[in-house]
Amino acid sequence: MILITGAAGFIGSCVASFLNQKGFFDLILVDDFTRKEKERNYKGKKYRMLLDREELFKTMKGEERFIQFVIHLGARTNTTEKDPDVLYHLNLQYSRKIWDLCTLNHIPLIYASSAATYGLGESGYSDDHNLISGLKPLNPYGQSKQDFDEWVLAQDKTPFFWAGLKFFNVFGPNEYHKGRMASVVWHAFNQISENEHLNLFKSAHPDFKDGEQLRDFIYVKDVVDVIYYLMNHRKGNGIYNLGTGKARTFNDLGKAVFNSINKPSDIRYIDMPEDLKNQYQYFTEAKMDKLRANGYTKPFYSLEDGIDDYVRNYLLPENVY
Image (cartoon, rainbow, N blue to C red; front, side, top):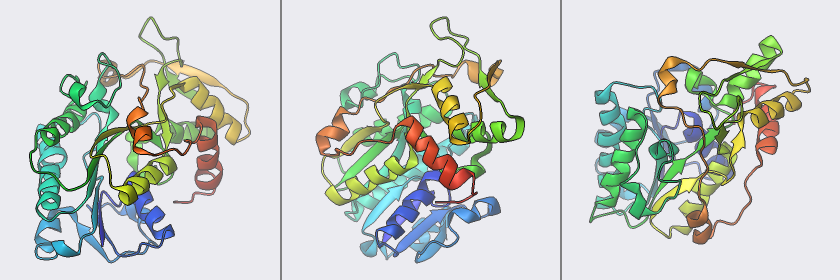
């Protein structure tokens, strides 16, 4: 069996769907299933069990030998979360227990880190282990991911295979429940559909014009394909960036959404919320050398192609993946 945490969420539910497509149905889907709005993400998928995240370790005690792989994507993903107890429990303590479970029972593990660990990018965007301790996240969420990465690298005992993935700006189907934390693509589609125009944040940085802030946007279908590759090859333990390696502007993103719904581009600029100003990344771009050296050679979706697939096949018809 394969255990997926965060399985009712955005990336986790896409992983479950992808594994179903590949013929894997013996899945344990772990999450907080009390949020009914996320039900669409797992309804219709094939799995062995839905398991509340707080019941995981008790329920699986004695059954560990049957777990073939753990994909740990469950976390508190709100980048504006300020409660240290919530972040400690879900992003650090819970992840440590997952790690120990996999180490003790020789279970391979893939877990979610985040590009939020890079902060303003003062130290660049390299996933070299020697540089990780010097990173300076901008918010408590990023720090919680950083703390776990550093803890992992300090462990003498590890799963026989493990990989931590620093997700950059992931977008795609099954994120409808995330509200403010959904991707800019999702927000852009909804704004344009309702108002015929798109609001983007003004730049408060002299080196970036309005809408010319740069991010490494990666389509969720590329993310699940990389996870599947690592599941099968199980080599090269370590922390890996997962972006496209090519930064694009928010203006590019907006124009691509307009094109996908066949509307003329009308982009306007608004002030950035105060709570984001001190934790806003103006540029992110993943160095992808390590994953490529591991043997992953597939090209990533371009921003335009990923948005077109997302809009036409999921957002317009209101489909899930």
